[in-house]
Image (cartoon, rainbow over all chains, first blue to last red; front, side, top):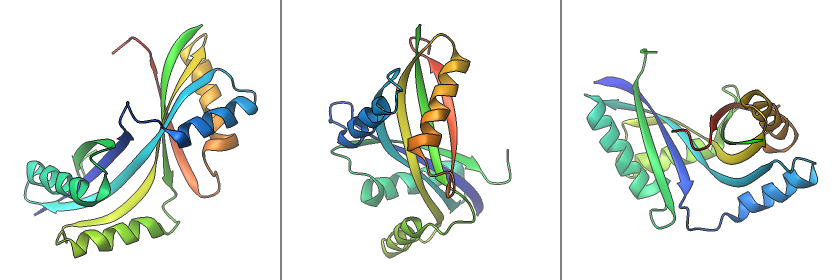
Length: 87
Length: 87
């Protein structure tokens, strides 16, 4: 068993209105930063995985995403796996 | 003026207890995934920036992070800038 470090980036699907993002965008404009726009807010999840190899680690993290971490109807996600100790 | 795409990754500082992460971790263990651990949950923010060059774009996004997007006492952030249209 090796230790892997996984990062999951969860983003709202393009077709879904990002209400939180719109609110932040108008707050930024109120703070005199009109050059910022198209704000979309998602989640960044880091976790450690024990698995025999990177493919198995990815498989376990994908299962966790599908079962708990993301809403597959509204959100997309990307998984990145790195071996711990390796830079 | 060019269009840049910025992504900001906001993470809770290591010394701060991540209550949300701990809750998700115990939920994952309840779902028979004991090989997952050290769950930490942060934010992933995407936005577009109009700026004359990448350095100015980064400066504006950093200002937005310091003023609104992050809590500098509890959170760290990383900014990544790419020119729009470029892959």
